[in-house]
Structures are given as C-alpha cells and as structure tokens.
Length: 153
Image (cartoon, rainbow, N blue to C red):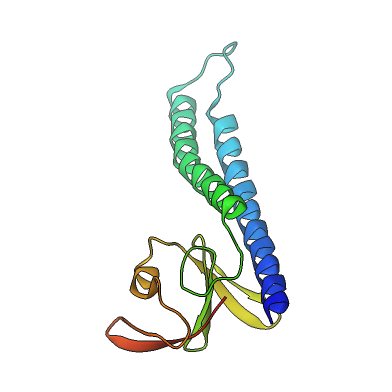
C-alpha cells in the first residue's frame, strides 16, 4: 500500500505544481500587460487622459504583483515540502475525511486525480489547525461538527 500511496502523493504534488505554475504564468501575463500599458513614449506629447490611463495601468500592474509573488511562494513551498508517507496530519500529508480529500501544503482550487477530488490546504488554515497531529480514526471538531479522519498518508 505504501508504494501506491507514494505514487498517489507524487502525482498529487505534480498536479499541484502544475496548477500553481499555470496560475503564476497567468498572473505574470496580466502584470506584464499592465506594465506595458503604463509606459508612455517619451518622444511624444501626451494628453491628460493618456497620462491617467497609464497611471491606472501602473496601479493595476502593482495589484498583480502580489499574486505573482503569492504563486511563486506556493511553488517554492511545494518544491521544498516533504511529501513522504505520513501517519499524522502534518504538512505534506494527504488526509481523507467525510468523503473529502485534502493535501496539506498550500491552498489550491479543487482538482481530480484518478476520479478522486482533492484540494490543497495551507497549514495556516482553520481546518488544518483543528486536525493537526491527529491520525486515521481520530476525531476532530470543525464548524461545530465532529468529523472522523478516515485516512492519513
């Protein structure tokens, strides 16, 4: 079973890296687009509306700078994280409970692998904090409901 679980974890890590890489690419494209729109040609005269549009594009580029850094940070975490088999809920663990499956690493959108739906969660998330250190068969309370951990690997 450990080999199967390790193969699943490797595939999940790869999928999460792919998701974040795609998000990073999109954020960079938006950032670069707004930066390009913010530049005015120094050789020409510009009216107030062109200057205002350039300033607005610069502000939007600045807003996209944060997502670029956020997605890069998530990629860095995923690349450095120990995805070995776990017995307890900790970073790098896959946790199944109540028909749901989460990967403790970074927050992601939901995604599928072999017909199972997963979602990445951050170690700073409230649900992780509720189940941190627990093992399969242990109970935790989240949103006022008692939940049993079905599996950890």
